[in-house]
Length: 388
Image 1 (cartoon, rainbow, N blue to C red):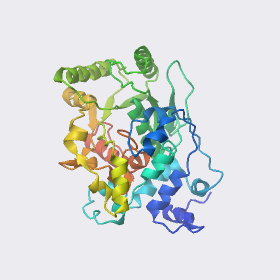
Image 2: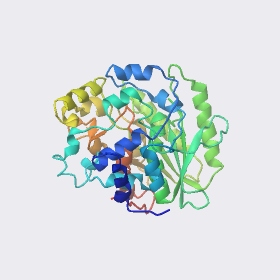
Image 3: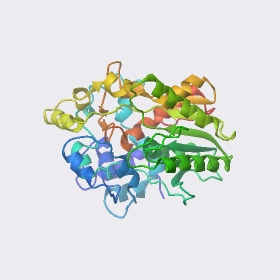
Image 4: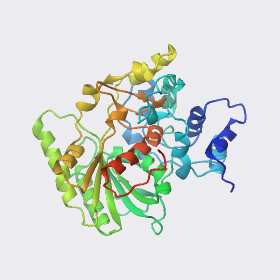
């Protein structure tokens, strides 16, 4: 297949009367890119009320499949490999998404993207799950409670073998890692369990089995031990508010105990520091801002103390306290927030799809800065970053 430059390939999407910017064309492609089933009937009702709720159950239980037979996606997938080129395509729009607050972004504030939002509140209302599925991740055959998927280069050809584990926030990060793994020569195994962060301490959550969470983590440790080629573990988890310092200290200790039980083949542990929360009225605020042609990011920003600092990430704190070259933290707070507020829309892209889960589109724009943080930390040795 002829592999044209990315911009010329995307320009093919202009046929049929599409007179939109590259960013808008990309967004339109994404919204046509997935067909899903979901068992969570309350998702649309909650979104329709203009409120952001935690819909991780709907996303985690969705059964996605891509259908490139018709529409804009067929043009895109027929032209190039989404897994290899998606983030590169996003980077062509210099101030799109996280790039609007990344290094060298000082001239982005006046960009036209400041008055756009993708996905829009209306799109999240109509199809919460469908707006979130960008990159397919082939499902692995189940082993006990383990239900995961794998992305990137084939195991035999990979230059690095990685596992990404945790609760539903790790499940969302799976989309970002799937976008870049093949380009980097990584093979990534993804395991996420709703409400089950990778800690030795398991706290009860209404509607979820504590015993099953404990057993899932035991099986995951055994699975890792049987695969010594996996030398790097990324962990992601929902941060929590704490009513007392002791509870926070218990959670910090729980993560450290869990990591100490890992096989010696795991040489590096990298914590993805959790993102800020959004407010229950964020969707309504964004809709109102757009209606009067105001920047939704600036108009609907929330106090950093309320949406970030009130939710300490115990895993990130655990990693920092260990002060070990084996353990690192990727903390992208400076992209989400300035010194006083955090933004629900950055570079024309919705940051979260509910109260706490990042949108995959924003994750796609964020991944170059994840790689940049890995380069600075040197936890993985030499890490290439073809996106910056």
